[in-house]
Image 1 (cartoon, rainbow, N blue to C red):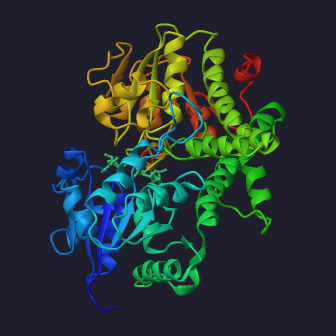
Image 2: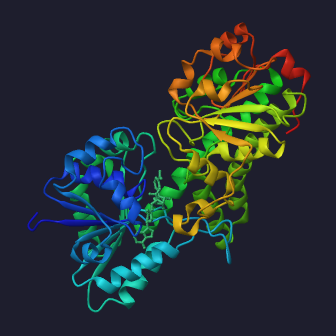
Image 3: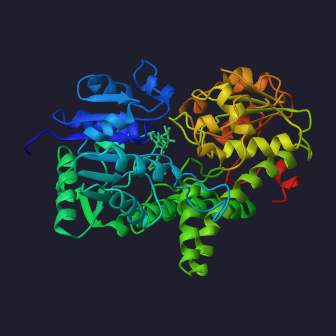
Length: 483
Ligand code: NAI
């Protein structure tokens, strides 16, 4: 397609890093530079120890880095040189002012847009990669055109659908790539240019083009639907426990209906991650702003059930152990919001640990991918503060003395009264539970928040077992938890 295309991506995070690495891998003739204001992050991308853990990512980066994939803090230079600029900065929930606790904070986006306007000397295609409120493109367009100095900007919306833990697989074989643009001749040309990038490896029929607002809203809607499925099955899990039904059997039977489908129907202690809650709150806010309170309340319920599920879990733990965990050692296995990632943003483990600490438990945490420093920071951070740049976060949080972090599940469970499984890491399925039992206080409790263990096998060893949505032990029936 004529001259060599140059791509620059602003934001070297969980989205910017992997997506650009895969574009560079699949399009050797395109130069891709990922820029970020956070120097430690860029240094890490240029080192042997990448800043994020994602299966398959190391190999992709190793193959392209220095060839046609570069990581740099020289934001302005690379933005000025690029033809296509992806913006993949964070879009946290506002913590102050209008829409606090709900609306998206577009500070980072706006400053990126102003910087693009400042440094550009040639026409640019600006691609929204971050998840943004509907109509953000219009605001960005205004910033750019009011500062344009005669330069032509085209704004595209190209939301990212990858899931952490399977990012590389998802990027190699996306269910779809969505590109929204203006319906003008220039808009269509820009859509076509981005389409040509993806067409290097994505089949044509999987590349969907829409108008800008449909693309922006589709991403919010997709996350809302996904989270809603989890809250739906979690709501049913509470009823299963009350009635003696088994949520795995119910989910299997329900998922066999081809209109519903079997995926994403696992009951758990609750969803986490940087996106679901933030994007639903954002959707709720947009509905309210558009005079649709009924629609807003409908989606709000998805988050309420998620919060309910987490507190229900904590209540079950405390109630089963004679209504107090004060001074008792509780092991927490898994802290990341799901397996195969070290990401702890909005992980249910934070709320569960807070609940247990509120009842004065001694917590010993093991997660194969999360550091002590990260865990202490997460536990001491105020709600919604996690998605603001690290330099705005407390540097030396007061460490919780009741929390210890260890590098081994056996160490975490030694002398504990109970153990909580909060992430579905594969290794938790094959632990030597007999050995764990032998080294725990009695009665020994297992609270499985991810349905990874076989409750029958653990009961044979002697554990009292609680598995989300599964028939309860006689013990648990005798110690009902009030949610
Ligand atoms: P992140 O926080 O990991 O990365 C964002 C990066 O942008 C940070 O490294 C930050 O330093 C940088 N940044 C902020 N302002 C900047 C500026 N003005 N100039 C240069 N760099 C700047 O966030 P993550 O997870 O990559 O998410 C980015 C966006 O993608 C969010 O809107 C999110 O909702 C969306 N998204 C996230 C997914 C995920 O699984 N994490 C999946 C799909 C979309």
